[in-house]
Length: 186
Image 1 (cartoon, rainbow, N blue to C red):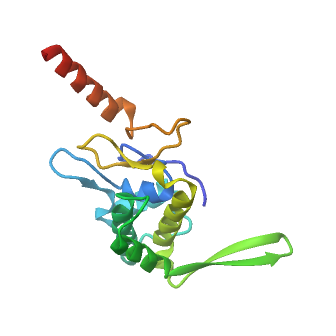
Image 2 (cartoon, rainbow, N blue to C red):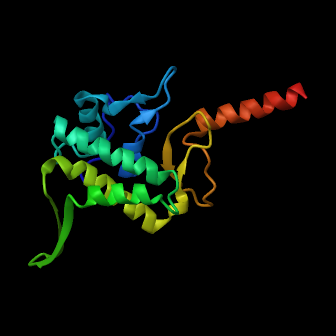
Image 3 (cartoon, helix red, strand yellow):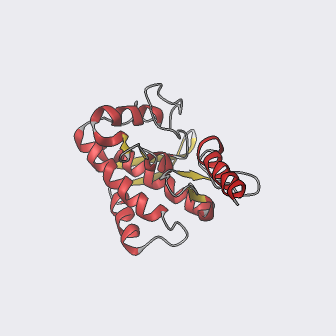
């Protein structure tokens, strides 16, 4: 993957998580209804740029549709990462069927080449493949924010593995303030 410098146009509150979770975080709570960065091609271009995929993936309607399919499958699987529901597993596998890694030995050494049946599936395939990597690494560290009003996901890479909030400054602070208020009223 190329650079992961967030696009300055990216309005999301949480950017830079592993690719699969970053794709899930293209939806976040708004004032009335959830915001969706992938509602149109312009937002998709911003996500590709922030994800470091703009030089590898085309931001057209077909690839946006494929990426939305991957996001829905990831959302269902991330809700229960230790044991994704069978329907979510099948949806993830359906995305993965659009590509494969070809391994070979080259004069420069071992090489992996990603082959997709259509360039439109590249971003979707990469995101789902990243999710498999996180599952191999530590499925219990794939988490949703503990704030019941927040819909963001993160990979807990803290030393003790006890992170609860996507951001202590926003969701964590609200929870602490609510607890303090409840204690002061008692």
